[in-house]
Structures are given as structure tokens and as C-alpha cells.
Length: 302
Image (tube, rainbow, N blue to C red; front, side, top):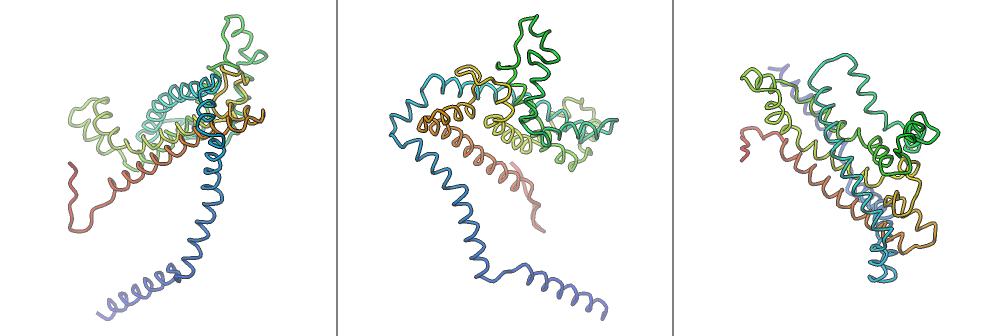
């Protein structure tokens, strides 16, 4: 009894010490919160406000004229087209790669993980140069492409390939740890009960990772829309043809068309804000769905 009482006392002392070490005085908390708010205000809120203030500086009419200008419209369409191609391809690749890595053991697994992480450690400009060296006029495949009247660099295919390269880790990297943590007991049970591999995937595996998949898609889409470095190298900066929204903003700014530049930049800002909202909603949904029930409670999902 004395030993049990002593152990309880020790645990109480440790818990009290831990609580004291992690509890700050009210004044310290207020200072830390104020510092965080000041930092956010200076480096997040003010720049965002400046973008919209500059975009509407000459009124709504000038803003919509800048947005409706043919080259601006072409940049918006190209950006959306690139994202519409890249995101579904990354979704398929991310699912396949995560399923293989998270559920199976095979030779070359670590190499595959390393290759998936490669764009994270490679400069986007270097990524663009890789495609120039491969598909450019003086590149490895350049003469063959020229003989067959195919153009990759300084055209839409090059923009899609460069964007695809810098974005393909996002979906896979969200799903791999999620699938690894879930194990494969449910899939094995389904196969034991006679389910086919595809039925097991669509009925068990995919529903279990749906929120992680959506989170990865949101991040992938945000990077695809805002990519600058790799696309700048392979695009050729041809007005109305190969300029995406970030490239078009740069050109307008360099030509001192500040209202037009910030008008197009405001569209990118709106997309970024919508991405943050969608990301927050997915994170909240993920937390509420996977919160363990309290002791004595039973959660029911309808």
C-alpha cells in the first residue's frame, strides 16, 4: 500500500511540475499573442491588403478592363488548363504510389520514395532546365521532335510537364504516411471474404484516405496555379500563348502597368485565400472524424 501511495504521489508531483512548466503567466501569454498578431499583420494582412488596394486604385472600371484584356484572359485560361491537366494526373499517380508503398513490400521501394521526394530538393529553375536539355532544339530529343514537327519547349506541353514535375509529390506525400498508419488488416479481411482487388480498393482503401486525398489535391492545385520558376524557363514568355498568370503579372509589372499587374495578382490572391479556406475545412473535418471517443461514449456515424 505504501509503495502504491508513493507511486501515486510521484506521478502527482511530475504532473504538477509539467503543468507548471507549460503554463505561462497571463502577461507573458498576452505578449506572445501580441507578437504573433503583429507579425501576421505585417507579413500577411498588409501585403494582401496592398495587393487589393493597388488593384482597385483606379476604380472598378480599370480593374475589370485589366482583367478582361485579351492577354490576361489567355493567361488565366492557360493557368486553369494546366491545373486541370496536372491535378488529375497527380491524383492518379499519388494514389497508385501511396497504395504500393503503404500496403506492399517490394524491391526498389526506398528508391521510389526518394524519387517522389526529388522535386522537393530540386530548384524549380533547375527543373525547367532539365526539360530544356531534354526537349529543347539543342536537347537530347530536340532533333527528333523537330523532324516530326513536335514542339514541347516554349509551348503548352512544356508548361504542363514542368508543372507536373514540381507538383507530383504533393498527393503521394499526403497519402503515404496515412496508408502506412492504417495498416492492411481491413483489406486482408475483405480479400478473405471474397472481395476483388478493385472492390476492396474502392470500398475500403479509398474511403479511408478520402480526406487526405482531398488535402493533397488542394495543395497540388495551389502549387500548379502559382508555379513560376520552372514554367518561366520552359514557356518562352510568349504573350497570349505561353504566359501563365504569375508570368503575366511579372511582365505587366516590368512594363510599369501596375494597376493591371496587381489586378491579375489579385486573382492569384483570391485563389490562394480559397485554397487556405478549403485546407482549413478539410483539416477540421479530418480532426472531427478521427477524434477518439471519450471513455464511456460511443460515436455513431450516419
